Length: 181
Image (cartoon, rainbow, N blue to C red; front, side, top):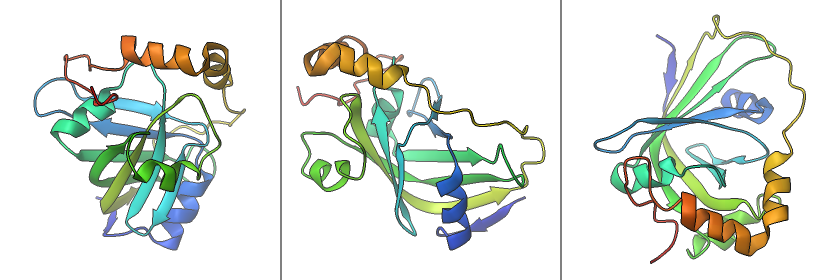
């Protein structure tokens, strides 16, 4: 069993700031469990018990659909370089959309992006670290550029059309809440 705490310590925060990738897991009350890798400069620490990530456009929108039914979320980060460690954040999350008042409060923490679909705010209830001895060592080569280029090429209207086509329901047919209609 790893070490468990109720909030992020300076050690945890330092570890998080060094990570280039994280994983997000959610599950609806019934249906498929989702586990998604995330990257780019899309993660922020707000305080000792709150983190925020910018949910960029993807081929699906499972996280948002799941959070409408069950707000539980786990975020996991692995040390792929340096000393081994796995860090998990367990808590309750919710989506913040461009139509929500809070959007303007938080979106300025990130570089502008046409791919910005939602913000996900996680209220951390538990932080767990474990050894990570089985996680491979890997060398970071850089961020992929495809998503920002794709969004810029599509333009705002094209991205919105893509969202309407691909991001309004989950794989299980559950609404994502992406649009207010």
